[in-house]
Length: 415
Image 1 (cartoon, helix red, strand yellow):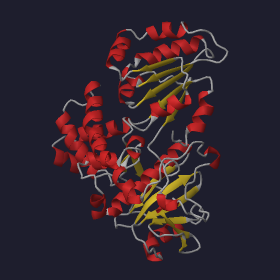
Image 2 (spheres, rainbow, N blue to C red):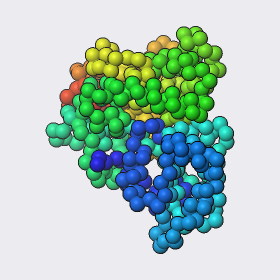
Image 3 (cartoon, one colour):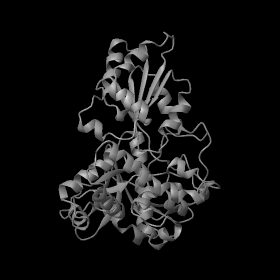
Image 4 (tube, rainbow, N blue to C red):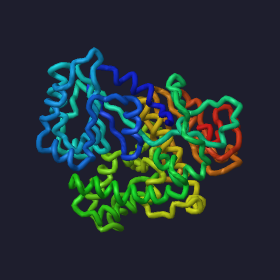
């Protein structure tokens, strides 16, 4: 079994006398990790099973009888419900049980979509629940093979606490181009290389269509498929509702709804524009990113081959850095990832906002970075001398380079 950074956090949190709701996109490893952490769950219901789902849709109250029928124990038994969003009424049943006895059971509800729950106003047990998330693999969980001989310390622009170090072996090391091609879903990372493209293509055609059709979230699957391909191709860029609407033949309000649907299914996220600059000509449109590069390529119907990435590697490399930083911030639970761009074209790819500190980051495909590559970082540092004291250039150099007192070039494997 391979380790996940969040394991020790969940072990501690799950012992708390609350209901625990675990969200994350399909194939991020939620069920696998929960089975590792809770191998002796007294009840495990998987509502991806059509028969079981239908049974509980008809009679969700049977969960109450099932739990009350469990033997009393000194240690509260775990009740795990996978794909819980498929039977929203179980949230009410869990609340009833929890309110009747807060220490008798430990409930863990797991889901891959918050859309249906949000639309119908489902009960997410406010004041009674902790909400957790699981994302695709980070470099801490799946290191780069190039970092195996690293023998010097590195100050990353966004490190995770060492106290949460992995207790199990990390996933096998991987080279940069492989990661940029196939992404970081655990099941894809551990599959034979020859099977990865097929697995990723089926992710969209099987999982998405199944999920969307079952919940009647999309009335016109053909129109959504066109949108998905275009949105994937635009991943990492500023949102252009009108452009995608024109190309797909779908109205702008529908396009906005489709983007929200991707976020509700944890398949994408937005990065807002930085608003704290003294410049007057800033763009304010958010950028949208797919949560995983492999899924993005498959959704865009691009050939899942390194040659495709190498044809225009810069934007893909930038997306990978953004996704990695976003995952770390989400796990930390504090801070925000933003970007800066002016109408004249000046740009800072990413800015990490944490309390009163700003950390600007540029991403370049170059192997030989120089201060000219960091000119926008220099400008940003001069505009925010109190908040921004250190900037980073993430690139393909082979070792850490100090470009100036405040600007460090870091190899991708040291991010």
